Length: 105
Image 1 (cartoon, rainbow, N blue to C red):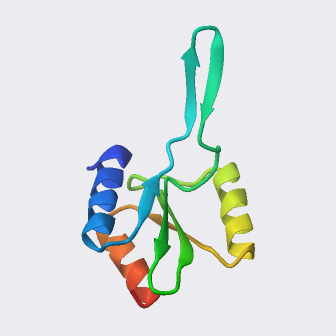
Image 2 (spheres, rainbow, N blue to C red):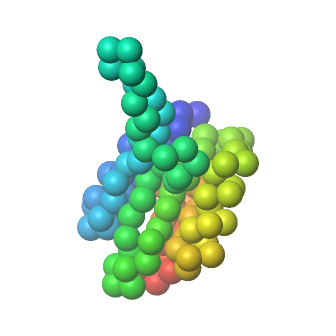
């Protein structure tokens, strides 16, 4: 079974091969000296990209098999969808390829 990290790396490679501009959204915190610095915004998709030719905002939440989204992730997904963006939850590159194909790319 692949870890979420492994799947994210495979997804990023797939997007690169398809010439889909994408960025990995690393969330969490790091401590520098005595200060905590937030990395990314909690709940946002793991990978954010823009699907050509429409330019649609396309978020990818990666989960390992059996993994589920959090309440915060569900809330952000709803907000993005209300703004006409798309967020998909995938557990493999094959699932992602199907989701992208559904959108005509």
